Length: 571
Image (cartoon, rainbow, N blue to C red; front, side, top):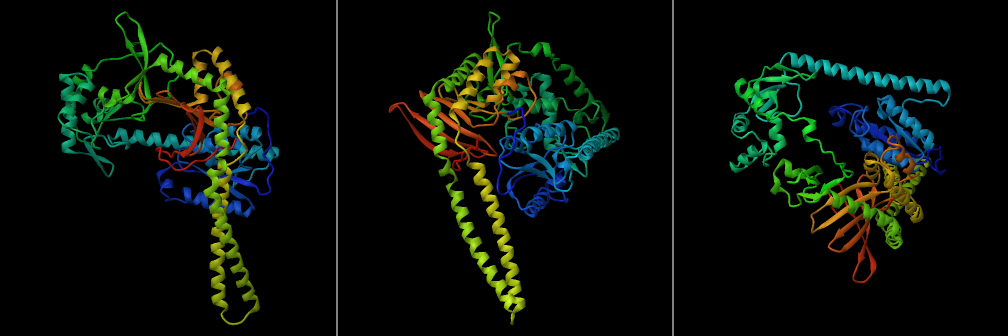
């Protein structure tokens, strides 16, 4: 990412990125005028009034004070730094954020990218007065958010003081009617049984095994997990109390499931664990990146203590902790081995020119093929638009000539004009999608230089900086077992535009390029190019060891991995 300001590419028609956000269930369900649909329709009309075209609509359903949990805003910022559009617009300023920190970040991105983050209903000029007004509005938006948060906290405190349940996920053993908790008899028996079993065998794992042997499942019909059992054993709801926002408890107005004596005995029997007892001193640079290929869950940091006192680091599937060791066929992987394999693959990607060049050539060659269905749809839309325009022109001529049937002709003209607007809207959407999928070829030399810089920085970084750098380059590592395959998905760019250590600032590329991944499967090496868009998109180049050549096939993975075709990435 460039640290100096750059200018967007000049285009004949100005392209707008639309950003819509809701933060309440009422807005999400469309029960207010600030719903996703109403914001989107207003912004599309606003862009049409400016004579521009829509590049893409970015959506979020999170609070304006958060950033890490807003993938729509993060994707918009990536596209802004890549100059994929000319201006970004939201319904009003508080849709962008209700935080001064995020506001300052967006203003800095404006200066670096040259792309304006505008508001359709609030116009701010570039004069000192306009910037002052915008800054004051940002302060007021944060103040409004803080006032709402304080009122919500106060209301929750008042409800807890009255012994009322504050809502949220319904506790097992209860149902909710008009905001009050009522006991569900058969669930209450299971919850009470958990407390009694804990006194016999003070371990959530032993309770889980006992419940499974008895055929007792949770609400979803799944075997109980240790974490769910642990949450029940620590929840004061079951003894007739409610938690307050400040962490204390108050007597509740709902019926208790267990006695105070049973609760006290269970809490006294629970072991007290401290951070010093469970802390793992060994650095785990792949923390948060390892994924179990069988369960599609994150792998947890773990270690095995040998008799000689040596501790061996492991990345262990979370399912084995929650549901038992035998529930996952993958189980765990040796930390030293997978970390060394990761370093070797990063070095191999930058060193082997043929592997990198062939994969990039395959991705670039597949660009036109990936957009061919959309281009066919675009051609069909253009034909229908021309046909509709001809009909409109004929109807206008008929009205100009006068004569009988004026009302009927006028009604037909209104209908055709409406159809024309809808077709033009679809054409704008298709063109934006084509432009998003296609673009300039990937630059192999530049990507190779970036990988070379990354390897050099990784060699001199400390443990914390090494973990940070790996998370900049690697999206995730999917481990499917020792005898199966390992997939490492990379991206030559960063998810966030600022923050982090000096190593991050040194290595950040000027613009995101593409994603790639290695796969090792019983001697067969695969290289896959992926794009960081809403869906995982890929074009992979498969090395045929027997022939010594590269064979290319294309696929596109949706949010759950279903094949859907293939698309390319704009560098």
